[in-house]
Structure formats: structure tokens, C-alpha cells
Length: 49
Image 1 (tube, rainbow, N blue to C red):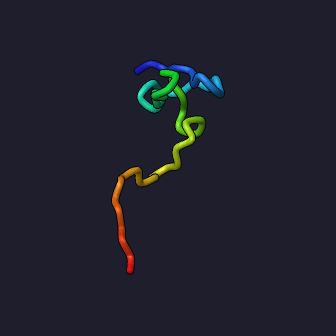
Image 2: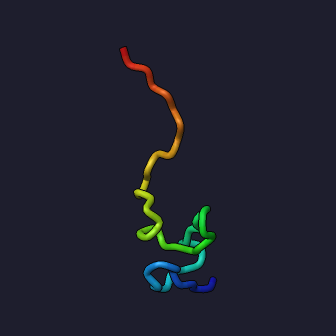
């Protein structure tokens, strides 16, 4: 295991916790990624009514 720095906040994290951004290919921590913890990213269409 190796530690890497988040490209945005510069804090050290275990490499497997960092996420790779699609647009800039930067390694960022979950807080800086803009994703919400346990966010459902599925594409389900629900028609009510």
C-alpha cells in the first residue's frame, strides 16, 4: 500500500481511496470529488401517474 496526495486538497490518502477524475485524470479524495457518499448513480426512469 502506498499513500498519494489528493490533487485538490493535498492531503495524504491510501492510493485505493483516491478517485480518478474523468476530465482531468487527477487523483482526488472522496470529499474533493464532489460525489455524495452512497449516492445512487443508476439511471432508472420512474413514471408516476
